[in-house]
Length: 426
Image 1 (cartoon, rainbow, N blue to C red):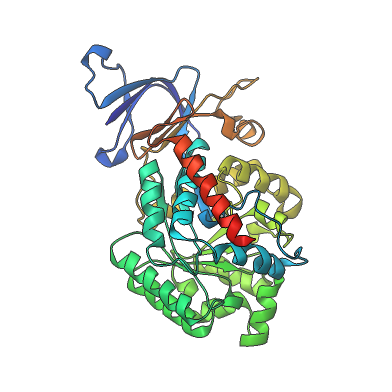
Image 2 (cartoon, rainbow, N blue to C red; image 1 turned 60 degrees about the horizontal axis):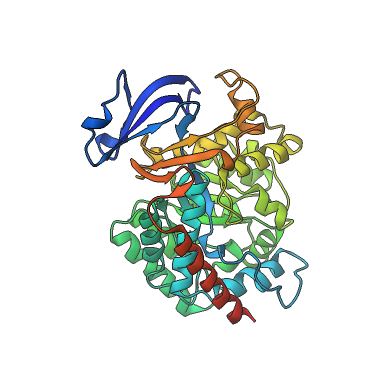
């Protein structure tokens, strides 16, 4: 399929250079953009060609999420826990571990479909996900992958392995990960936080990642309890434990959160070449604290931790919180917002080429140009401005309407599965 963009104002995601004119994008030719002097006439268009009028619109590379949890998609509005959590450990115990243990494959599929819908509506075409369903493991990654692909989302998936539910889920998690990677699917080897991962599982996870030339995707010191339990059990801090196990030797690894690190751990992460996922709103919601991500180096990407699927919102939260915490500026915020593209491309993952575009109907009250773009990005651009989205050369959102599936059916299915999950939680 060839999509022609008429009278576009294209903003280069790296240089912020503005280019005005006509463009063409396809799913072929490695997804490279073409700038054209003229467009074909409507009479000469074939059935797989379309012209989009982009006059007074902004066109730029679509967005990517560096850390998501599709398994939490059906949580919105769920019944209150039997006990109101008083700390992070209880939040896991009474909310998230209670939820993930009750998921079945239909619920997982519904979660993936509705997450894909929300991502695309927000201009997100690539998702790095960290999934958990300890009593519905086998086939879960393929279920998510198919749902994402049907709707139009590229992905990098993993299953969140843990010892917290016993030997059987642990072994099934290892097998699900092995099978998924063995089939040639791109993904990570996923682990929950150190305090739920024993030495045997950690060793096997690193071996899997090495065998399939990928990295680990792990939660790291999201809360102080992770450090406390690590010191108590292993007589070392979390990052040192992971470094000793070989996690930091794998440049494709993503360490999510990294809030409660000491100076030695910060240096280990910064000097290793691994990547850190910042999830500001989730950390605020869980009351686990904030940190200075600047100290961790340049390899910081933004995620949502499953709270939502809006990366513009995540960038805004990172900026507003980062000003008092780390003296962050608008340029650094934008670089973190876009750093996930570097992660994907530098590590040879597919699905995030130049033929992933978002068309914004940005009703700016003032002029926008390369010199003031960052001010508009931080203080003006919102998900409501996303009008159309192209994913891997495929038109997936057109004038705010999903083109690849029935939006109403997805939402109906999600609500049905949400009620089923909530009934089990009661």
